[in-house]
Length: 304
Ligand SMILES: [Zn+2]
Picture 1 (tube, helix red, strand yellow):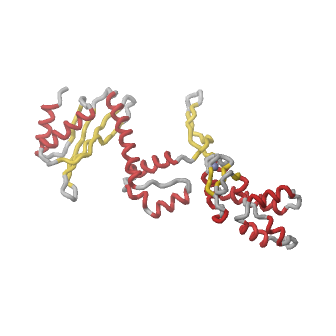
Picture 2: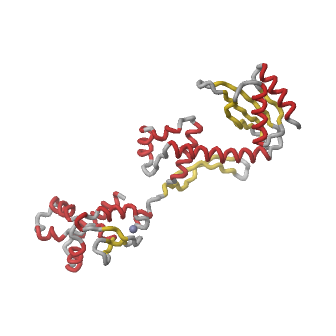
């Protein structure tokens, strides 16, 4: 926007400098605007052409914003040429309201062009008729997308195990501003929501995958006590899909009320019911006496 505004100022400057300005235009310009002359006058005074008289300077008051607005019947309102919106205008207050509208107006031509495409390259694997495949770089168009960036940021917090408040850190915000000024880093509350949406999405995909699985699932589990004296249990599922790819997924991470065999057994059973998992091959747990009880409990409960 800056460059556009500056260009416009330049254009107005040039028009004002040129000798062949018609009288009609001049008088129209004069009647159109009696504010915001300061900037233009200063520009003129700084210009290297000393031959321009003060009288001439006084006539060059038209601000570029007037090219984008027209007067209405109400002297305190002007209408945007692009979206037709009426903007409050008081000669005594200047034209800042109009300027602000131009930078925000969604129909202003320069604003329409804001989402520029950037040329970029992506890797693609091409298989030749002979069966050999190679990776080549092919051009593609990249466009800024706030939603995509937010998703990628949430993914980064998950993968790198960062705290949600990371997005509010001063250093990170400065980095984002330098990298892509259009990107607005989300607050910790928003990014928490984004992470939760990813969790819901991934869980539903995993449920779908497990429901179609033709192989059995192996489980591993462990429990521990946190610094706040709270008991936790983690249950991991290991399986191979139809393409023989090994998967390892945490299907439950939850607080448990105690470490007795029956409590652990019940927690595992509840989790298997939630995931609708029936075809279990093995359960691997630590060598503790309480775990013997939980295995006996599960043996009784899980029927093949
Ligand atoms: Zn507008």
